[in-house]
Image 1 (cartoon, rainbow, N blue to C red):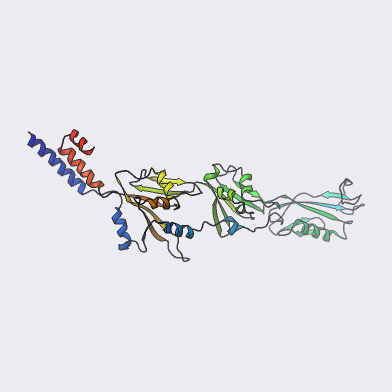
Image 2 (tube, rainbow, N blue to C red):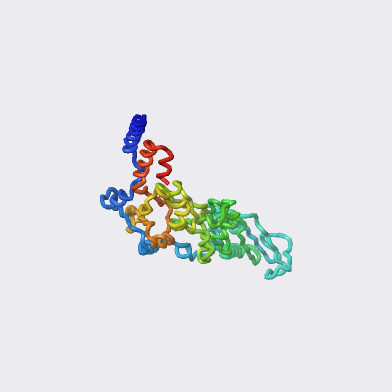
Length: 377
């Protein structure tokens, strides 16, 4: 009876052995990753052990850019008129008026001779040709000029026709000089610029503010061919990055735009978003619950990354950083090693995992459950 039962269990164990022989662990082993650089299965691939020196070199090579350095120096907009702006033109004539008759001006207004008569003309939209049409003055060039220059041009054209003319030009509706605010803001749209010199945070405020917490937001400014991105918190910490905006800028606010992917014997396999201020490798490991105890290979923690090319037009360089969790200094390096958007955090299985799994299966198939439990304890 015992021999028959033993034979049955042994046959079952051998069948499981055959099944396991055809199965492989999900993902490469530590040895496979280490050999990948030698075999050059991917051209240019490098496997680099994570050390303090590597962390410092990576930090120096990563150019985060800044608004102050790359976008600073813009002059306040709104000083010059553009196509599409609406102008309000007021013309005065000394008494008796020759062209523009109207009631006497309030003499309390300083700087205007007593008896002068004002006449505010309807709003003029600057047309595609960049001009506005003023009665008795004709097509007055406006686009690209300041309001003071337009005033002088109107007076020059009316001189000899109107009686001692004076003019005041005001931008009633600013369309040409504006920035576009998009993304995770409460009121996306165009924000007009004024001679005050609106800055990045001013534009976000006029767009109703961000729809998500500031510590998880980034701001991207697109100015022509230049595109720069910064965390909102970094702008708050350094006011120099709160730069003056230029007409035509596109300001895009984004919520948690970065992420890395955790795979293998990590505590959790998932795509993990992280905030704009960035996270370190130690924080990334904490967010996935560390590595699986008894299953993961502590010397087989890897960060897969495509490094930016050093030469313009060159292809990205594949790099794998190897993290040895058995070394105490690794934990210090992990606190300074910054994760990047798109990184893959992979934890390989321990070499003994499959062996242990097979032993457990064989033991549970041959020995009584209580005995297996006592052994595995």
